[in-house]
Amino acid sequence: MIDQHFHAERRQRLFDLLGGAAAVIPAAPLVTHHADCEWPFRQNSDFWYLTGFDEPDAVALLLPHRPEAERYVLFVQPREPGAEVWTGRRWGVEGALEHFGADVAHPLEDLPELLPQYLEGAEGIAFRVGHHPTVEPLVLKAWAAQLERQPRTGSAALALVAPCPLIHRLRLQKTPAELDRLREACRISAEAHELARQATVPGMGERQIQALIEQHFLASDARGPAYSSIVAGGDNACVLHYIANSSVLRDGDLLLIDAGCSLSDYYNGDITRTFPVNGRFSGEQRALYELVLEAQKAAIQAVSPGGTAEHVHNTALRVMVEGLLELGLLSGDAEGVIEQGAYRHLYMHRTGHWLGLDVHDVGAYRLGEHPVTLNPGMVLTVEPGLYVSDRLPVPEGQPAIDDRWKGIGIRIEDDVAVRACDEMACGHEVLTAAALKETADMER
Image (cartoon, rainbow, N blue to C red; front, side):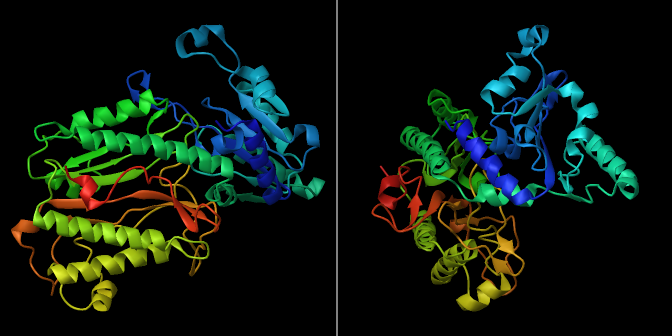
């Protein structure tokens, strides 16, 4: 697990970007599930990235304008035996100092009184407005008071800015230690997919496969699933975010599984595999599967330093459109089909997203008119898919879909790290390679 040394390094890098602005970064609150029961706690990813502190309702202050010994301040819930009997041990003020590297720590109840003092002298305040309803009024009140005094004192935080672009720029570029954690999440996730494929037979329920996958996550000491597992047999696979997982798996159908685990420190795996429930592809299933696999392999090869996620997507898209033209599911020429978007009734999503502490991780894909350049340390998914159904109308000028193709949904997804060329890899590393995907491996 990543220790406090790494969180301290991240804070220092953010200090370097903040200049003279003070950052106020709140933790996540508990969220009610029903009545007086809360959902399992999930820490705010930005807060976790900077602190490693996994309790609700805390607030971190990063204060580059303050003396060295009070630049990192944590406000936390204090130790309280009566509450801890019900909800578990808290670290408290002492733990925040001893185990989480805070220069200064206070009980959370002191935040309204002390926040204005800590923000005094900052050139700006970095705080995300609209996301933290209990902390936001305190920040705005402190800022307003500074602006009121500015004509007399000549000093105030003149700007309220979002810290997200700065933090997310840091999070986009993974360190070697973070890549190791992602490899571990991908290893566990790949093992679960292999178990699921080997266990699947006609007549099983989608939820049985979900249970098998998620049991492996928990048995491997992961926190649990990184997102709601998709276990979609037959036509259910044509619903991109199908999570009911309530159907029976039928002989002759494909099964699409999109599932990954989240580790104790929130790093995630995200894998999709599609295979025949009875162990044998039909002719139509095989043709579409091999097309998606060809597109995915080509897109993975496009992942390299200096490239872009947009180029990765366009590479997969070109292969898919050309293959669909050959199969008669599209008509015309590839350039025209792509320009008109006439393929979108069959392939309606992008080919991937950033991966890290969030499954759909933070970080820009474009800076103005220019796609973000891929650099070593970035991690993205590569996941083309085809979904043949009546849910979307066939675009004008495109052929009607024969019934033999309908109900086939296929997606193949791997997690890929951008790498500089070395003795191990050149351009990229497929973190999820242990989950098999060749056509022959999907059959039995």
